[in-house]
Length: 214
Image (cartoon, rainbow, N blue to C red; front, side):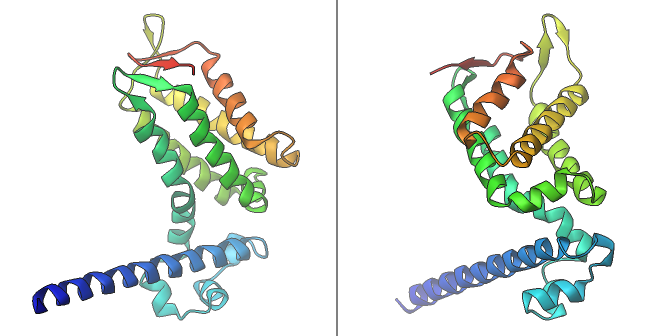
């Protein structure tokens, strides 16, 4: 019983520690995003981020190597769980992709982007090229992981993955930018439906997968 109690206490301690790490990293990301509106990336220092987050430098360095590390992790931290859902949850047995599931996941992405509207407008307007390039790099890397497992065809012709990825990233970024810049005139779900139609309108066959419309 004593050993079991120690094990439970250890597990609870680990959960509390994990929660503290999550909260600290979230605070650092939030502080970094706030600073981006006030200063150019080159002018931001680790001390600026630590001061804004109300932590010491040693705490910062226990989670990140430097400010570049924060920049490169800010998009995966927010978007990767949502984008990962596209790959992991929409393909059913028989290689069926259901439109309803795609719309549900992409709608969540639009809602998340809307919740940080000011930040994403700053990124997509291109005034801070470091932010835009980092966002683009993250999207390209993620879509590369997804499409490396698929074969996209136009009839019998295999379409190069680089081209497909470039098309998807450009479509995704330009669609989000238009929506935010125009003060989100359509609902997130409508935007998800429109973007999926834009992508699928090219009539490309993705390997042996097929989309079923509910």
